[in-house]
Amino acid sequence: MDLEKQLKEIEAMGIDHIAGATETPLRPDAFELSDIEKIASIKKDVQSIMQTLGLDLTDDSLKGTPTRVAKMFVQEIFGGLHPDRKPKASTFENKYKYQEMLVEKNITLYSTCEHHLLPIVGKAHIAYISNGTVVGLSKMNRIVDYYAKRPQVQERLTMQIVKELQQVLNTEDVACVIDAKHLCVNSRGIRDIDSSTVTSEFGGAFKSAETRREFLDYIKLDTEF
Ligand SMILES: [Zn+2]
Image (cartoon, rainbow, N blue to C red; front, side, top):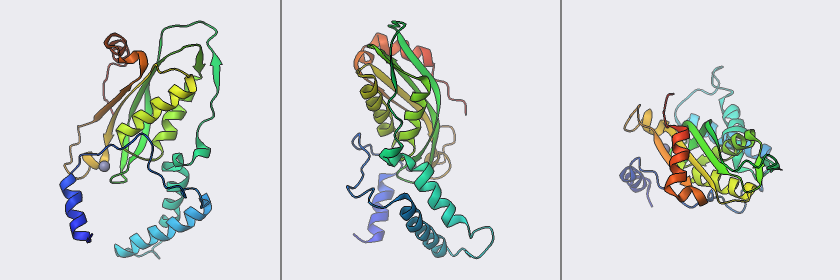
């Protein structure tokens, strides 16, 4: 397909983000290169983009950018692609016999939109009802951070967080709501600075209206950032 036709198709898609399956679409050979090899390769790619844009890469302010961006992609903002970085599963027995809902709210979330490679900034709210296993509270933040550090669509991110916690906690009774701003919407394209996107995934007991209501009452959605 020629480039002009592709550009027209992308334009026709507009800002409507298409959500795919729960899994991040990775190729089977995704981890054949080491992190260092990836950094070296991406450095050249970024150099090429800047070169094409007509930037002077010998300028003091620009010369470190390709290396900096390559490192940031591989080790930071897309670091969650690598399964080695997945937080270790450390669970505990629910000794207090706490049978109620546990809610961890306002977890700060930084991710990257996979359609524009621009930031997604927001808050995640998670709830679960223990069936005998509990996790440390910071574990939930780490799981959010791990899946956020990938090229993402918000719908998939929400589902990945719930699926992971369902496995770790050995229960279906997990829910997640994400309220986030997409800079591809806020800063370019339609430039709607005030809009934010809310996605939710309700597993097990959270499919019942009453349980879901209790969770939503706890988090009282309120976007202030
Ligand atoms: Zn986008």
